[in-house]
Length: 282
Ligand SMILES: CC(C)(COP(=O)(O)OP(=O)(O)OC[C@H]1O[C@@H](n2cnc3c(N)ncnc32)[C@H](O)[C@@H]1OP(=O)(O)O)[C@@H](O)C(=O)NCCC(=O)NCCSC(=O)C[C@H](O)C(=O)O
Ligand SMILES: [Mg+2]
Image (cartoon, rainbow, N blue to C red; front, side, top):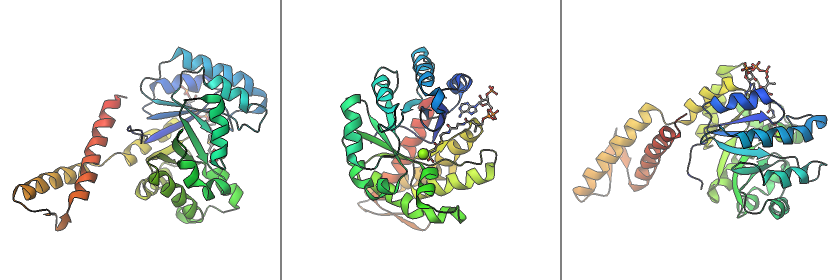
């Protein structure tokens, strides 16, 4: 699995020069430069050129840069895929992926460029494991708006109608060691609602959240970073376990709870994540 933080992944319409400029100074872990749903049909071709120029100008530092193209079954998709190879980006994101064959078709055009897949259709959920197993696939992005539309779900409390689909995608991503980021929270002025949904996604196991507005970035970054209490616990677990093994024991106890080797793997991952976040230097 690609080893870097993906706490916040901000969509930016490829057509919006002001937003493309602003993102150079936002503390996001990843940017999803969008040529698909955020761009109107009459702006599609111009957006591709605007985005290519913005990426050529650079200035995005170590933010992970992903370009979401239009589907290959649209009039813009194949040209997007051809052009994205020339863009200064880290990966290409394909919308509405239904099966690994969709990734094969894209890889024929984009070659070695890593692929991310929008998981946002019923078939995408059903075939999530086969999609995650694709050798070019680096990460999943949940498209909860399209998914809700196709499933005919209503919002529900705590996203209950979507939980099966979210879990199915998570299982697939984790089984094949791929990154997975949660869907967007549409009410971009509702900070409390976003915080609650970020925490739900974090607790389910997502690596981060996709975002639509700069005001959402700090909330996602905080939710998906280890808390001070988690870091403190990790340090104490490691110290207690090292002491136990020095004394010839395979198990330690911290805060009344057993600590085994597998907990130390998690504790070390927590500390590595803190170091990786610090290294991003936003
Ligand atoms: C939602 C918005 C249309 C709101 O835009 P606006 O009213 O212009 O917001 P503000 O005036 O509050 O903007 C303040 C400043 O922030 C900049 N800005 C706004 N949005 C972004 C952004 N996404 N990235 C970077 N910078 C941004 C503005 O330029 C202002 O800057 P300044 O002039 O310096 O003050 C708008 O936020 C927006 O268009 N968001 C992105 C929408 C989008 O990308 N949608 C598609 C992706 S979501 C999706 O498709 C999900 C998935 O597929 C699914 O199925 O679920
Ligand atoms: Mg979508």
